[in-house]
Image (cartoon, rainbow, N blue to C red; front, side):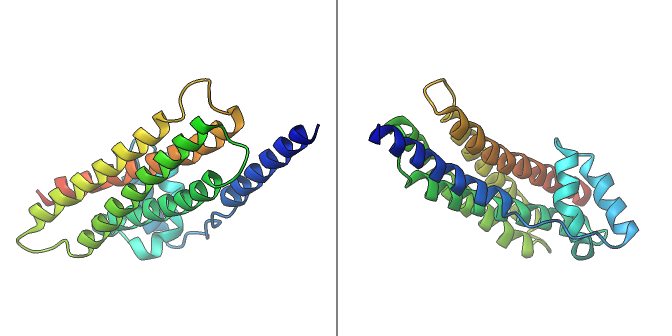
Amino acid sequence: MEDSCNNHYNFVTVFLILLAFTTSTSAARPATGHTNTEFIRTSCKSTTYPNLCFSSLSSRSNAIGVSPQLLAHESLSVSLETAQSTSAMMIKVAHSQGMTPREVGAMQDCVEELSDTVSELRKSLGEMKQLRGRDFDMKMSDIQTWVSAALTNEDTCTEGFAGKAMNGKLKTVVRGKIVEVAHMTSNALALINTLDALHG
């Protein structure tokens, strides 16, 4: 009976940690500037997840204006912020009680992969700020390589939560967060590729 209570308590603890991170994402501020907003909406049509693209970037319309480079920069920034908050959530969940050894292993692998993702996105963002002049093509190539690597890490992480051996609710919530990061990164890569095509 005591074990059953402990397991229930442990699951509730894990669930509350996940809930706190899920609900802590900042609410989008109303976008200002109709032209800027329409530019974002139109540009997002070239991405794989246009609705997510628009909803994640429309609150930044003042910072973006109608610049494809600023749009790609802000998209990377949103991806990085989402990866960082998801990584922090994963670390907390990985240290909570009541998970099977396989779940713990998958969480730890995922934390490592997300750490790599954060590093790749941070490098890309830094390079994006310097994206001008004669070495545009070389810097752009670096950015595309790093963002692609980040996307691969995220896909590897979601694969770790496949199969029936994982806790159903835990798997659903964690995979949902990782998939959100992956979709945002995919959108960022699409906007970066558009910027590259415009420059060429």
